[in-house]
Figure 1 (spheres, helix red, strand yellow):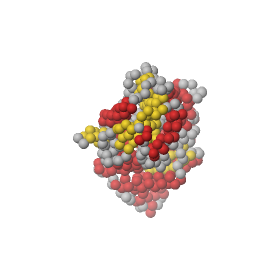
Figure 2 (figure 1 turned 90 degrees about the horizontal axis):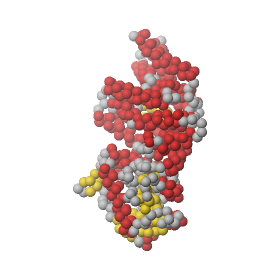
Figure 3 (figure 1 turned 120 degrees about the vertical axis):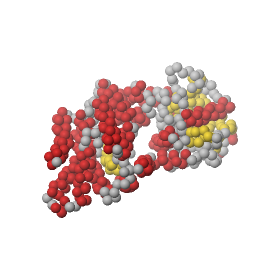
Figure 4 (figure 1 turned 90 degrees about the vertical axis):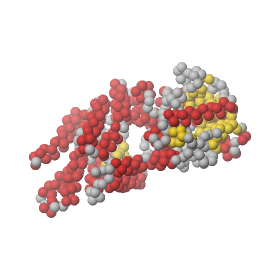
Length: 549
């Protein structure tokens, strides 16, 4: 019987492996004590020489675009006992009515010297802010128009800001801030950031000042920060040697069509970097060790663990070799603590027949091996007395047979989905919900914590599956000729069903939908023959079991 402590320990172990930076970074930052930031105005001449050196190329860019220096402020760190100074220089362009905040940092190698934000103010007292992957842990209310498209250059960020700031119903104010006004503006932004972090349960206000709160919102914020750092690093905005994470904005509020299309298009063109052979081997062994340790800690007999690993490995090798045969790229196998193992690979255009074979190539060999061992044991008293071999044969058959059941995301569920629901996104989504319901009731009936965790993991993907079904349905109603990429981008950027999604999620959704639409649909012959073979694989063991009983 698994105790609550062991389940929690297992969950922490899984999170540690899958989100190392989030866990470690979150634990470190949580114990930081926060202090009040005091801002003071300084002149350009008061900037230290190394700061001026950092600013020089950025200032040259701003001057070339018609901006001029207005004011500067200096402030300390929000982290108590972190004795460093930050600088914010203010530039303004009268013709464009664009305000620029040029941020510098004293942390060597943390960023490429500085970061720029472009701002436009409106008569409504709202503002539009454009960054380039540099929203330093800022959390702002929804009435800010916040843009952060990871453009990769400040010039592109400026161009995007000029497009995005044209918002219906908003009238621009083209007046520069005074020295005191710029200081007030930064204090206001800081106050808004802290207030929103309190509202979102990331911070708490104590007698000794602000402190981070050990909450789900806090971990979500840290995870967002790490993701933002990784995303910015991809476009070369952060120094590759940096160890300081920079935040992704909390959401892409009120994003507009111009920059959305550009950013999503970049996401569609992005291809995952193939893993190295050394990286795959490292992942295989570390995940396998974690898998064994986890199940050992929750009470699975150590003598049984090698058998479980062998069953899973043979199962995944079946998927792996089928993928290799059909030309999948970047194939690998890894273990998943709590759930089992997986084989993955990439192929741009996959035929339905190939998918069908790949899905069956996992459970079928394991079942065949079990049957062969069983027949051999019936003909050999010596083999029949081998308890280890008998246990392996039974375990292999049961695990692989369960995997053949028509429940998504088991292999059997994927077979049914590929053959029957590929053309019908709504039915595909209903099949997913039905599978989730079956898993939840099974977890309750068998009182299985592991099955409950599996159901919980699937539950988190409900929104994604619902959005995918909506997008596929909308695209299928369009004519399939023409640029499907552009049609997908138009839908996710204009339809109200997707307006709350971040740009990254919109790009990932569009990418997956395009891949599914471009995939070959199963022929009637494949549906008939494939389902007949699948049903035979399901029914035959049951029939034999009933016959022998």
